[in-house]
Length: 525
Image: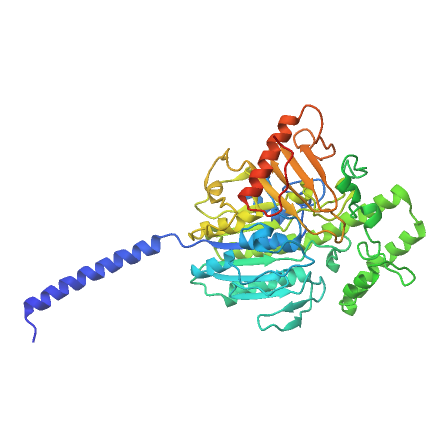
């Protein structure tokens, strides 16, 4: 039997331990929880089609909620303006030549390489992705995923599951991706762990097939033509060679839905394969809307500028109808987070894989280093502890997303990631003037659809220098302050030798910094 003295000492020690445990538990309860991340990404959604950026075209109240309660980046860019390569840059934090996915025609993403979701998993995060993947291999680094094959289908789409089964799900794709994401948040994740959820939509990708509920929207609106819609590409040989003009290359059947049994186009079969995925009710609603427009279109037999401008109006209307569904579904996600008291501890990110041409230079599509496709929208609803609000002018790029997410989660950013965490920007109440002086871009997919030549370039806050190469050797230089629409190539002009030399030096420095193996002898002193 133990002595009373021994029992007394043990009791005191136990009381001290319990007090210490209680104090520790209180500290843990007061400690900030790891930040959750909801990363919503669309395809080909350009900033000028979001009302928080531009009020001429779209009305996007739910996207505007993110911007008004957080930040809107006015200088957000991509490293390679093409869907698959852009996604690979985002996942790895590396330029295309480093992650190995340079273009959509020849590449398969090496899914064994490190990505920011894998690093988050190692740090105890749950990770999930629903929707578009478009990297040819299957996702890795996710606790749950369901993806669409390739580009995906707007109506009654296929989904690939983690069992590598392909299943058809009835409904409209933008709704379905959101349904799966919210179901995971509510029913499938461990709610005691932080999470990173990627909600990646097909919208607003070509051929812009709207939900039947929204087909009548915007039909009474006539949209203004961009001032350079009739660009003649003087001094820009690569732009002149590109095959993405609304006038000449936008397909009436595939792009604009003007299908009729007696009409043919190269893309007619592709359009009909999408149409034939619809059920009878969806087809009936679709036909009731498009058949009268189709008959009127062929009866008019439009030519020249009348045809070009008719195509433009149909293009903008169809595009914005797809945006409507997207904005509604973003609202569903925000409502869920708000109703479940998650916004104080969740970073909500909305962006696109690149920008897009909405008639600027007479174009649709992307690929070029020019501003409309180099720029990408980036808005964030910030959790507690991140002080920045309003417009953010610092230059960021999609290779920066991974480092930023890791930094936010308290995970050390790997040295081989080429991007730069902009978490300090989000923590700062004011602009950080010397944040980034320039950024680098490289596009590889040629020869290919739309015939955009291979090129690389560097952009700073004032100028942009571009080199088109491969079967062409042309340089372009733009003063973005006096020529924001990039209509006047000043490369080789008298009096700008010093500017040219400075930009050449920046281009050379960027290619050395990012270790791009494609380098040329620069015409500099």
